[in-house]
Length: 255
Image (cartoon, rainbow, N blue to C red; front, side):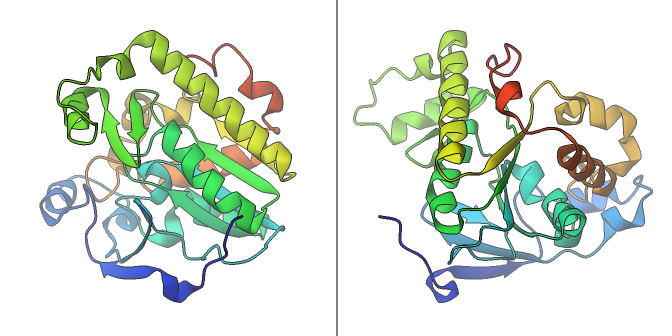
């Protein structure tokens, strides 16, 4: 049985910098980025529930059918941009529906399912939007790893001799992505939610792509996409059809 939470249950921190959005990175970015919105002073209101740190302005403590849930990685959390400019905030303005930002910095597809599985039963939102994180990330027991730091997983498994290389084989990544997408679709079906996915092969997901076309639109941390990308992302997600057919295409089910 899922238990509703009160806002007081969460430990909220107010931060001037977060994740890759450091003062050093912000100073480097300020030298060449042209959009003044990407240079704004930022306040992060971060709260932690279980393993994850979230930035959502709304707290999932009650049934809220006419609402949106957004899931993804730091590009959804909005590292490097003000909260009002993140694509979940823009989506809230576009749809007129309360929008929960459940993006997790460094998050994976595993993380997206874990977060959705925790909060969708509480809010039972009618709409779920996912910015698909890199398939080359895994979430093991709430600890986040990428293919380049797989050795750190050994700190959280029963034995240092436990072989973790299999987590990042092409076959395992493909199967993991397939399982997570099917599971999220099934969860949405159970609660009558419409799932829309920003696929890993969609143009706005490509880091190389947005750095090319928005070179001077980068976020304050000098790494993540800036305000223009977030605005286009929200417009794109609101415009695409429900993703039942999209989820099961070959392109969606491969890293």
